[in-house]
Image 1 (tube, rainbow, N blue to C red):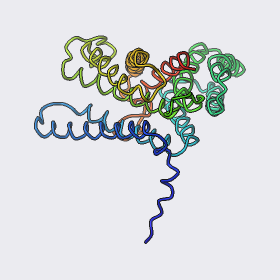
Image 2 (image 1 turned 60 degrees about the vertical axis):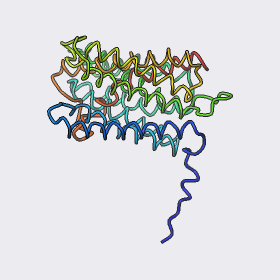
Image 3 (image 1 turned 120 degrees about the vertical axis):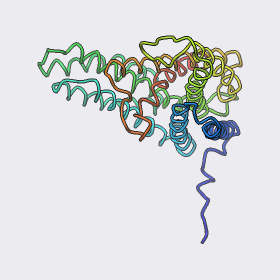
Image 4 (image 1 turned 45 degrees about the horizontal axis):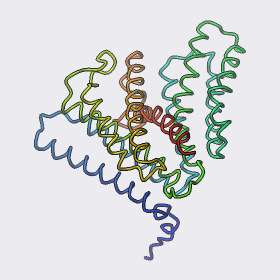
Length: 321
């Protein structure tokens, strides 16, 4: 039987060494982490590393999703990221207790997802940046008002717009990275930027948790997230900043700029994590959903990205574009 490998000729993985390097690095680190936690579990069965294993498995899934879609088709990348926004939006509105009369406004909000991602796809920055914060901010309250139910309307207005900002506007910045114009001397392009921010957010998540487990003594906000410690926070920031420095070849940033941006990405990832922790604690749920069996919902895995993506995008856009 003859096996056809022609599809490999079209795979974007071979276009430049930067993309190939980061993909090998991602798989290498995930493999190392998986084997390390397996060995630790065998040698020290009393050590609780279940959460570390869960996070690593989740990032295997997320990494495969982003790498496959980014490498083989930019168009598929837009669809895949838009689906993440849709799934995260659906998870969040389903647990926040909207009124029956809010259903049509929610439908309008869902319709904004393909519009937002189309604007990202065509690279229309002016419209992309104002569509949800301005246009939908003005239209959604109107849809709620037209229903005529004013009891609880303020909460619905605020909550629906916040969900849209977090799950659609924030995440859509990942897609827009792929539409950024080419820069002279920057071979990795938008795909390099996308893999950089996804990987850096991933490693920040793992590093803050790992340092917290190893050295954590002093709680930061025990009433919101009891597992978050100053040692984990600081250790994660230092580790993420150093790793971002060595991955600067995936960006058009200078070395000092990459240090600064990586530092802010680490902080914004932490903020995204604790914001979602506070919401889940308020609602009284452990996870936002069960989309990923055994690992919670989509939003549980991309809550940090909802903060790091816009922070990273606008920093890079301002500095380089």
